[in-house]
Image (cartoon, rainbow, N blue to C red; front, side, top):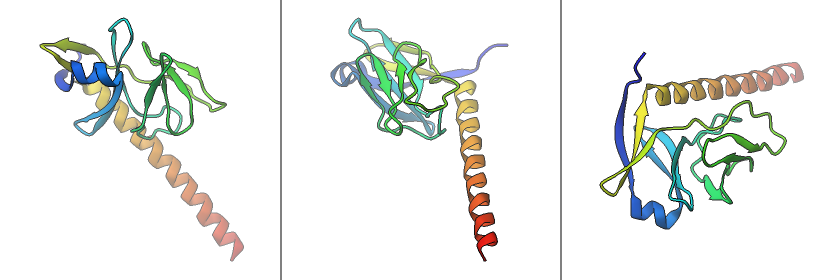
Length: 143
């Protein structure tokens, strides 16, 4: 089955070189784009695979992307979990195809990205609903 995607410009190459990593949003989806010392380009969906929330402050440190929420680190090149900080993280960051064209950094944003974001939203909402249910049950038992 062919993957359906569109190429979207997310940054200029010069900006990415200066910052080394940045979080950008396209079509409501957060992405972290980064460049390594060998000029390799990498992109991942910037959603925490532990808590299923957006990670707007994700930074590149020593070849790893660091979650600003829990401190977990992920390999820059493939998104694999390097240090979970004791959290139960079943998967790494979702990679996204990236290219450099005419001085622009572009991402191939496809249906797989949308599906991943939708799944993360459902997981987060289910977790929040379970938490609310516990609070309501505790309140009912306390009355």
